[in-house]
Image (cartoon, rainbow, N blue to C red; front, top):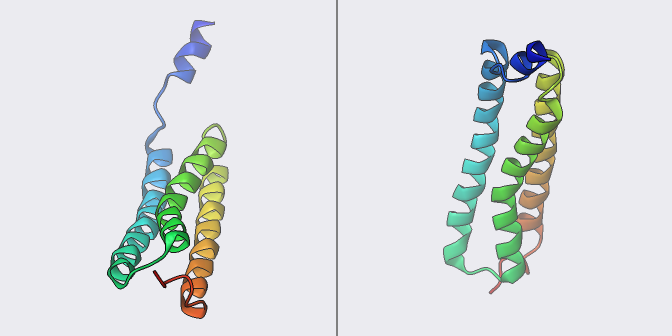
Length: 111
């Protein structure tokens, strides 16, 4: 019983930490990009729906990172990396939808 407890309380390990840190940089870039876009568009005046979409686009990468980390936490290093990359793909698709919405729909930006 104590062996299982010691194994469960062990740290992530260097390999897992590098994978999480490297993927975290890409997720942080997505958040940074969303914040920069929000600060660029906000002075022009946006409606409530625009605020919702842009604030959600800032929070979405963080949410996906936490979920991907929770799903891949107890799996092998390769499965953890695949889970984080799949989550990053989901974030990229969401960001492309936000970019298309803001470029194609002017009601999104009107106050």
